[in-house]
Length: 132
Image (cartoon, rainbow, N blue to C red):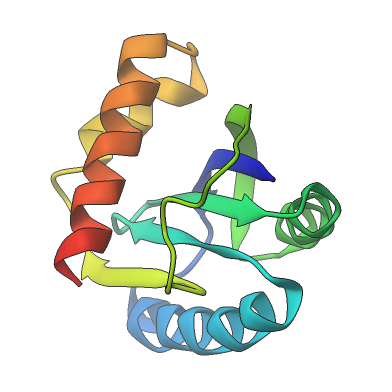
């Protein structure tokens, strides 16, 4: 099992964000279920952060698609871990809506991979998924 956290900059125009995020969540939930992927997505009206967990090959395949996705720029893999258990069991994709607060935790990760910042972001994303 592999757990990967990435951050990216959104290329979505403000007037298309809501509809496009809805499509991302709908398609991703179905696709992730087929691939055996679980995880959570954060959108901050400017940035994405996502934790993807599952079989290493499936996680790598999904990341290749995300890197090529026109809705993302500056896709940055922030943290990769081998794991023996899932943290998002039951969620092919958890999404709890736009989160402006978390943006301050995502923004610095593009410039510096701070272990404390990564740990805090993972914890916040887990907490949001737990309240969904």
